[in-house]
Length: 243
Length: 178
Image 1: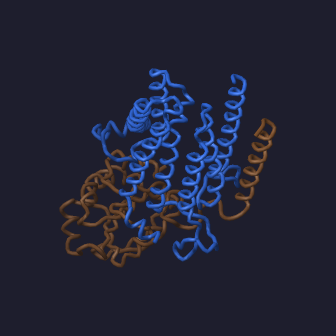
Image 2: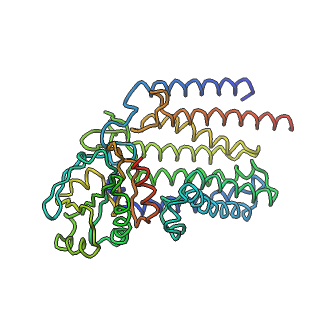
Image 3: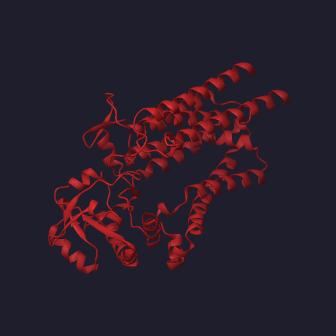
């Protein structure tokens, strides 16, 4: 069944999941945005300019990192290769664009993030499904009955775990996350995502090793969880002080 | 939850997380040792022949950066990226860059391969996967699929789909040559 799914949604069709997730996520976010004091138009503006900045910023950072290579063939600046997007540059530019739009429209920082949380949560599901379809993430060897076979050995279906975890995070955020206090919804989502990554990275076959034994991705997730807790507590205290 | 309960919850969760990191480090492989068609893993080895009968073994090419490009004559993006691959191959071959273009012969017309090589004036080795074994080992689901392998035999990047632009090829080749 997994093989049939992967054959049907083989790359580049796996990108469909991201497109569908972006559309569905935005639709769901629109339904709740008013609760956080963000109008649907403002939400759409943030998302639209954020996505445009994501693409332009990602490509721009890729060019800045390899100026000599792009100078050899300048037309590649507008090449359709998604692999020529620098992911960190793309995210930084998207964030910057969203902040600028938010300031110009005088939208609250935390309110905007809260309103966008369903969008992020559904996008995480889409990302997990696209990884599952791509079939390029391998798990550690296992003897569990649900292990999947690769070259004669069973391994943890780590992409499937990611999809299940992202569905669970979305379910929790959607069910309990309509918190009117600014920042709580987004920070709860971020903390749950960091916790799920902390758990699941242990089952991935490859990892960046720190101090010759620890998985760097888990350490990063732990630090993210720590900062989420600090910010959550800060938000809760500031709310109770002002309230 | 009141403030104290929250602090206890945060501390317990973080301690449990730190313990999980320690447990994960002690059990199971944390480094990629077994070959797999994924970035960070040793590239699965293979031996294939060219249409002229010359044999190439991937592991014999350690010390070079290798691009294993899975393609077929009927695949439009494969055709579209061949001139860029040829150009970049000629640019970097003196530095130790090799292209192994693996034709998916089991699902291709073998009589189309030689005319294709001549039409596109390809100078790198074109290999024939006549049984589909390499496709299975490399889990190829889309054509073209490209695997950039560094000088130590590890996959540095995988690009699925195409056509790859010259700039993308140059960036990935320079990374693999490091």
